[in-house]
Image (cartoon, rainbow, N blue to C red):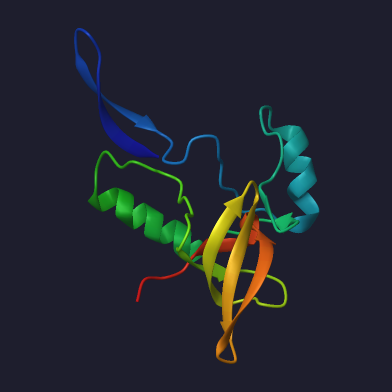
Length: 135
């Protein structure tokens, strides 16, 4: 949750709202996860990545909490990938390989993958890509 100052016509007020709207982070054992879905109204499903339930490391949650304690009125924006961006491939044969986006076609990206002194061209789902760390 984050505290932010909201303006109405007649007043300003500090309110608490979710940092990432529409998501609830839970720590649940595999055997209990479906019971939780049925028990809590409003939960539709778990977030999946590459066909598996998405996992958020405890360290990442801790970093988010520390960030929220230090800064106020934070904005969350999705990372958008564009032509010429460097990306890291998260699964498959080229897992952990850095590639360059040549083009984007819907849910797929055409990539240039450097290997053995040449570029291979491949079309991969955007869902298995993430922005490469800046050097």
